[in-house]
Amino acid sequence: MIDTHAHLNDPKFADDLDDVLARAKKAGVERIVVCGYDLPSSCTAVEMAERYESVYASVGVHPHDASHFDDHTLTELKELSRCSKVIAIGETGLDFHYNFSPREAQNEAFKAHVALAGELGLPIIVHSRESNFEALQVLRETTANIWGCVFHCFSGDEHFAREVLGMGFYIGIGGPITYKASEKLRKVVEMCPCDRLLLETDCPYLAPVPHRGKRNEPAYVRYVLEEVARVKGITFEELEEITTANARELFTRMDKGD
Image (cartoon, rainbow, N blue to C red; front, side, top):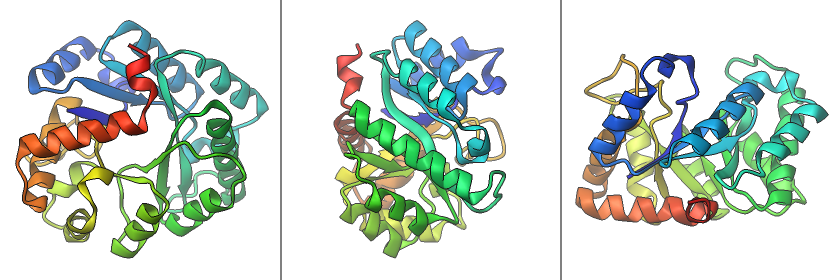
């Protein structure tokens, strides 16, 4: 299994990171993508990737912090990306639910991330909340090359999923797939081809049942896999093989960075 979106760089893991990684390994999680959400957390993600064999990094600035994004930040992200274990740019995107940063600042930061990913030949990890079609429009209108993209912790409906799939992008599924109220998400999983699905925890957030309400961690991605396999009507082992191959196909640096 590969957890394609984790925040082990969150302070909630500061005291027991080695234990968290040991539990992940015991659960069958062979690789973990630690995603930056601002410059300091991106630096930490790279440091973790350099320290731990199973960890890879993505660098970027979350839309909540887009108002602090500037040319210096962009330069630093580019420099961090020189590390061979940096396999993606993100998480980046748009969040119109909280609007912690002005929408214009979010748009400009997102466009800069997309351009950087195009320049470096890296895929993009997109955060989109109440901004799905606006985020997709940025990707449609860019003049940069797009080397792959995942809409992580997917929250859209079937119509939006078809738009994402139509552009050749991936859909990231996390803990909410295990929640009783997530019927819309299960419908998306039903219609989405298995070769377009990625699995994630988004830890420490959104822990799946039976750990809902507690700190999430990479070991729990197996609960996501179990539920997606149930919805798709295939075995755990079949989906594990497919989604692992999907992650390696999107994150082409993953094997090169070993």
